[in-house]
Image (cartoon, rainbow, N blue to C red; front, top):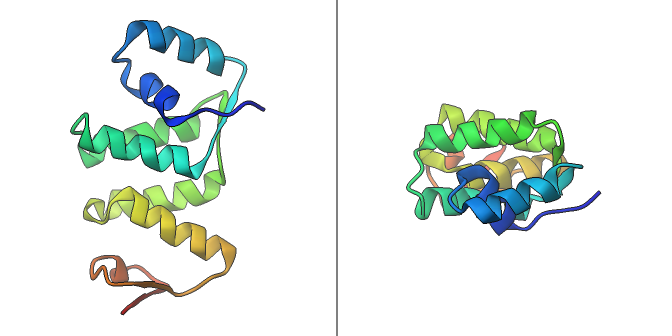
Length: 126
C-alpha cells in the first residue's frame, strides 16, 4: 500500500490549494497508509497554521478513521487517543497519542512533567 507525506494529507484536509488537492485525491483514491508521524504533523499544521479548534481537529481525525481508502497506523491507538483528546482538548492530540502508543507497546507508566496529562491513567508525574 502506498503512503502519504504530511503535505499531501494537509491538502486533503484543508483543500486550500485546488491543484494540489486534485493531485492528492488522485494519489489517495486507490488507498494509502498514514503513519503516526504524518498524522501528528498534519494536526500540528491544522492547529498552528490554520488555527483549527480542538473540535475541528477531532473531526478531521474522525474523518480519517472512517475514511474508505485511507488506513491509519494502529487505528485502534489513534481512536483511543482521540477519545482522550475529545474528553480533554487542553491535553493536545499528540500527547494523547504518545500515551496510547506507549500503552499499546506495554511501556507503562508514561513519565511526564505535564500535570494535565497525569490526569490520565498509566501516567506518572515526574
